[in-house]
Length: 258
Length: 282
Image 1: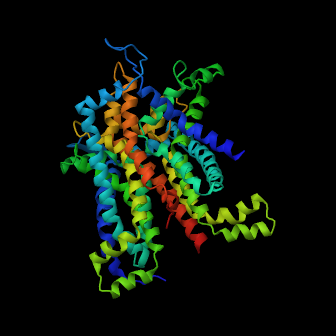
Image 2 (image 1 turned 45 degrees about the horizontal axis):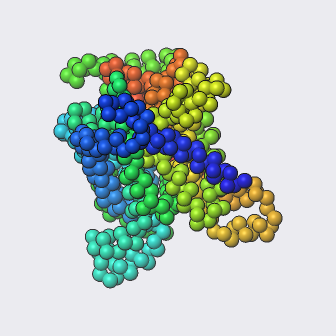
Image 3 (image 1 turned 120 degrees about the vertical axis):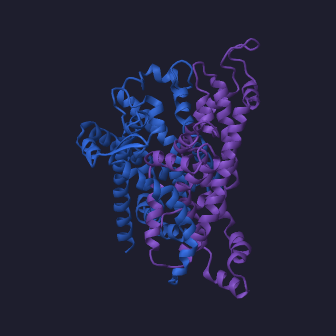
């Protein structure tokens, strides 16, 4: 009975992916050399041979990496403060990050575009990396905070007695201790940033197109759906790798502190 | 107890500054635009609360609001129980549950704009894996309103079930085994164990699930637009689709007023929610 449930779940989750993977290995537009329906790697070859698509993958990787790095470096001190101290306005701060996490991107897209074009951040991966912090930084803070709180206070005090202060405490003691938490936070920041489309679209007008927009641009008058699916399958690879890396810590999840 | 120390603000300051730049500043701008008629950025006129009264008095807005609320209710009603169910099921597998978690997390890494494409391909009557079967039983997502609803709901569930499962599983697996053993000795029914032991212990995890799923389904755009662009006959015209139309039509003033209203609705929900959470925690 319970195996049946798992099988039904697996079928439901995998079905769309299976169709996409099948299509990615199928020639869907007939060409001179290939008949429609031929099975092979041609779609992947075409994707990798296209400099624009390659550039899109690099763009996406750059801004997602930047975003994850930003969220962790800025989120870690804030998470530490929230886990270890009470301070005037701490609850307001928690409420604030919750509000920003749930603000729909489409609400802010227009002023973000105007603001960022003033700073020359349109068409640049830096702009997207910054704006994705809007919803990723709160998540990073929640996750890191719960991991830091699980470390006993005495751990900090011992390190301080040993003469570690500030930065050396963070790097030599705290970070190794909560490494899984950093992994989980990085995972959630990564996936929310990698798959996001609203900001990614509005901030890339002429260049710096991320992978999501490059896929969108492949839908034309005569769409080579096999090639679209090949590109999509490639876009899943980093995410699947991330899932694999954090698999044993994924179950820690995150809870809300408000 | 954590000590009170306002120097902790120095650690929070970078986060606050960044959120101010990408969150608070644009938000103030959007509220300000909402009171203006914007032709170009140098051609802006004050119109006062006109857009707001226009929107609030239009039947279309109220109808869309109703549809969005109904969609969120359905999404939460399906995904939360299903997610908890899957998490409970995975819990019985012990260490092997990690494979299940990886499975349900897969849809989370698919680019949002490709999720509707996957499903449209799947239900395509001629070529989709499910298409011929669905066509045979008369499933027609293009022209029958509630079929479109069903499809969007299935797609949204496919996309987000993983988040519910992961967070619910996290809460459930943190329950000390002694609780369940004690319940077993008392001869408690499966339902009683869930109702009195598991549910209270995962309420914290469920809180964030409820909030995230409510807001994201309330503001669903990418999937809903790609699947039927609000059709048939406006049957799936959600709030965000109206906003999208105004932005595409360059009616920036109206769009900003509408965005402000949406933000206020979300804010009200968050506030009610946080108040309820704090009440419960005392």
